Image 1 (cartoon, rainbow, N blue to C red):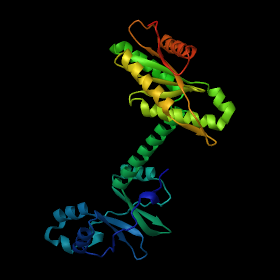
Image 2 (image 1 turned 180 degrees about the vertical axis):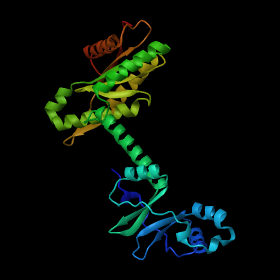
Image 3 (image 1 turned 90 degrees about the vertical axis):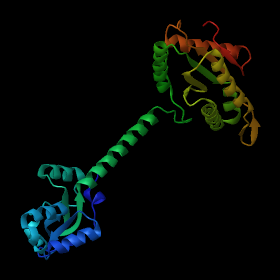
Length: 305
């Protein structure tokens, strides 16, 4: 909840009831402010004079206008609010009473003023902040907490979405399963903290080597997935090989001990005979199994497509 005190102006231009329109006009022009608050001897607001009030008074008093006093043209009585009240209350009062400014008082003293513009700007900012917070929470719910990549739930949503997109457009998509070779040995030899560090490094390489249009995520354990549109089989194979090579060339280290990591990759590519997204994922998994069975550290395409 945004309070009035968060957005009100505290530098308020004031005048007495006996001040002339000429004097008030000069002060409004000098300070470039649209209204002046009329206060009594105890500094309590008793009226407001705006530029519009002065312009309207010219039609009534004509040449006598500038000699008239604030009490002759001010809007009175005035509504007042407390600084701890929320801006929604101020907005409602302005709307119901068709006014654009409300003086703010505390202990029967004028301490500020809030305008319709102040409120709309604050509400707009509050809305954007809420929207950003909602988007942040949604994004966090879709992320793997260790690697920062998308999680399995989000990957499965994207699989369905991109599969349907390929069916409608006729443009192929790829599913790429990536598995870290002998990852259990890393955990057993160097400890689980080292294993987590390896997962995070692999995730960083995946993000770096994948294209911006790819969806990259951790599918579970030491298994990752890359989803995205491709032009053909060769482009999918090229992407997989680029990722595999980058991991192979990376120097890993735990407890001052250096070692290397390799990954195996299985790839499937959609075509108009692919029966379902479930089968497309299954094809990529089978290709991954083939890569591991044939020595690991390699990229294999599903051959049954």
